[in-house]
Length: 337
Image (cartoon, rainbow, N blue to C red):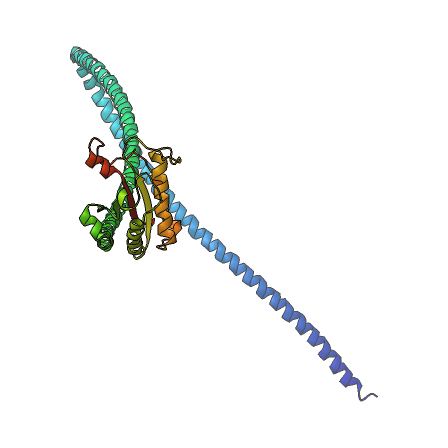
């Protein structure tokens, strides 16, 4: 037991020494921290000292400049003071001259004022005139734009009209060519019809006339009917048989049968009959149309009949020849529309 006592003492001393060492280390660290803080403060004070030195130098320079300005001002004041008397003398000596010059300046000022007033008035007038011109220019621009639009519209219409005229011209040319071809075709068809009434044409009992795309076959009443009658004679039926065959061979036609008479006094039959030329010609036209349908085979939907009595004479009724020409049956052969 006594043997371990020195060892315990040594350990106790070591522990105390270690604690004291740790305390000293902490104090050293605190001192180092304080030293760093003091160093930073020292750096800041050094910067502030440099700033103050610069401010001092600037203030000294400004002071020197101010002192120089004061000296210069004093020199100018001295110079002005010395020249004040000379100026007073000069002013006194030239008072009359200055008065005259002042009057001249006042007169010039009045003239300038008048000129300024006149200029202002002129300026206002010019500004008003400018406003008027500007309004007129704007109106002219609007009118010009409107006229330009109207011109463009008219040009568009003109172009369209020119195109329509060109098309119309082409159409008219085509129509004219078609009409010419139709007229030539009608002339050929007339030739076929003429062959069927060649003998009657030679005897003066038939005639063919062209009217554009249509033609008229005129037959004397005596070649078809007895006087005052509306019944076809055998000779008339034979004639219509040839005529009907020729007309049926021509396609796309409409046939209009017209009967006419002269204005001679109408003679009724002993057993009665027709009341006048009008009734007689209507009956004759109907008889011819019916025969052409029933015996020659012409389409009744394209057949028509009309009696005109004495009211459409071909020649004056003042001669036997004229009255004979007026007593007729006309078959108009026209294109179906």
